[in-house]
Amino acid sequence: MPPNKPFPNPAYNGSMTGRAPGRLQGDDLIGEVLRNMEEGLFRIRRKTLVPAIYRIYLNPEDYEPFRDVVPFIAGEIRTALDERLASWNRSRRKLAANLLGKIGVGEAPADSEYVRIGDAWIVEIHPDLDGQLHTGEIEVYSELGSPQKSEYGAGSLTRRIFPKDAQDSAPTGATGIPPHTSEKEEPKDDKDQTKGIAFAYFRYADQQGPHTFEVTKNQVVIGRGGRSYWVDLKLETLPDVSREHCRIRRDAETGRFSIEDVSQFGTAVNGKPVGRNESAELPARATISLAGVIDLQWEST
View 1 (cartoon, one colour):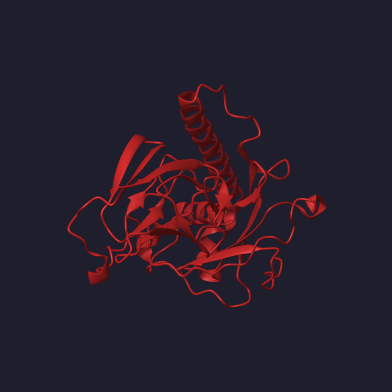
View 2 (cartoon, one colour):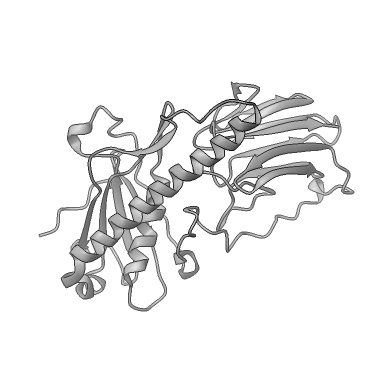
């Protein structure tokens, strides 16, 4: 008999997705677990912990076709988790090496990595006997690690429910970062429109190489972007950087700039944290650090 689903409490990170009518496939379960894995990241010093335990619930009608192959599917999910974890760490080392190489420093520190608490992934698949899920819905609860590892921030994650449509069930990309295939259109705001004059510049290097970005609007949104997340400056980098990480605003009357941090893992200006959901004035020149993963060199004209 499957375990009772957890009550909402900060020990779990849960997510739920809806799907268009039709039979669920194993890839649907894998995609939802990988999405949940990203949502459950937890930073501690120079490490990023990833959830190690995943409990998947399906409507009983959806569960029935999976019943005889649950061990096999669970094994495939564990393999996908291994691949995603390895991909993130490869990307992190490559990004760090590129950045440190430019300033003549050696290899990236060995402890800059994504880590799993515990020796193995725990993946369970159960029918939803509470009658809360409709056909085509997948619900995933995750935890950082086993109870005996409580010294690693047990209770620090939150339970999240995310309704999704069929378009959101697309598989993630081979790079380990979800593809950005269904973004919102850029919001139209007359106050934000200018004549295309560059007020400032960003210079940075991400996984695609070095870039220069011209600021020609009174508001610029920065982050990894993605489905339902419009950004002006889109960064190809690690998931420590939020899909919408920070916002740069220009006062049209004074020409002064400010930065607002809307991220999970923080934004700093010249080494000083802005503060989550807080704003700070931007000087004419500054280094803006996103989650300690990528630096943007800022210069206003």
